[in-house]
Image 1: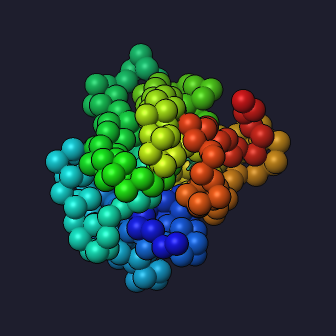
Image 2: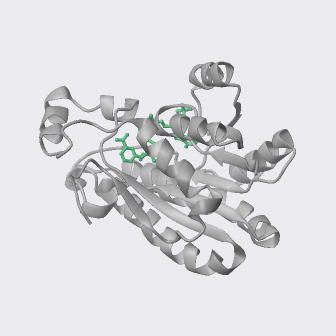
Amino acid sequence: MTRTAIVTGGTRGIGAAICLKLKAAGHRVLANYAGNDAAASAFADANGIDVVKFDVGDHDACIAGLADAERLAGAPIDILINNAGITRDGMFHKMSREQWDAVIRVDLDSLYNTTRPLIEGMRERGWGRIVNISSINGQKGQMGQVNYSAAKAGVIGFTKALAQESARKGITVNCVTPGYIATEMVSAVPQNVIDGIVAGIPVGRLGEAEEIGALVAYLCSEEAAFITGSTLTANGGQYMV
Ligand code: NDP
């Protein structure tokens, strides 16, 4: 059955791969983004996927942006992928309040901002799929990422609590914790650091965005109705939980 899906941060990296897998599964997909208009329009043109620009860290912008998305699709959103995320790394003893706030706002507050406007409709319709993209570093912690690790651990708690509240309404809420995936976020990391990371990944390479996209698309399928509240790791064996 065709459903309407929105992927936050869906125009680049992991989010773009999720959009393509959901589209291939037959869904009507919209991709949200924040500010990179050139990347968004290139993605839209190449893939025939509508893009909607709003900041997931801004509550009012999310309410308006999600309403626009539903108007554009001509249908309510049944599948929400909370993927948009940023890093503002630094050792905690040197971390500014701005670095802390930016990451909590975009990586954690966003889950309230996007999910709250959509969950009532999903409950009324008796069907929904919510997938939240956390991180390996929300599970194990990462030096230089106290802000990011805290936000991404929060995503896991959000997932488990909302899954319990939503289970009887036909809504599943799951979380994916990618390891290191070859996207622009990771290409910002110096090569010698990447080499050290890869040395610690049993599979011996970075992950591909498509590998996360495929997992997310499965979680959104009818067949995945019994999977809820789960934290699915996809990290090449780097951290086994
Ligand atoms: P990228 O930096 O490649 O892409 C980020 C996407 O998010 C872009 O579409 C960007 O839009 C959008 N975005 C950023 N901030 C906002 C915002 N405030 N509002 C709306 N959209 C926003 O990221 P990745 O693909 O690497 O990461 C995707 C998710 O996966 C993130 O949550 C990240 O934390 C997580 N993750 C990534 C890992 C990795 O190794 N790459 C590992 C583990 C988790 P625009 O183009 O306009 O800037």
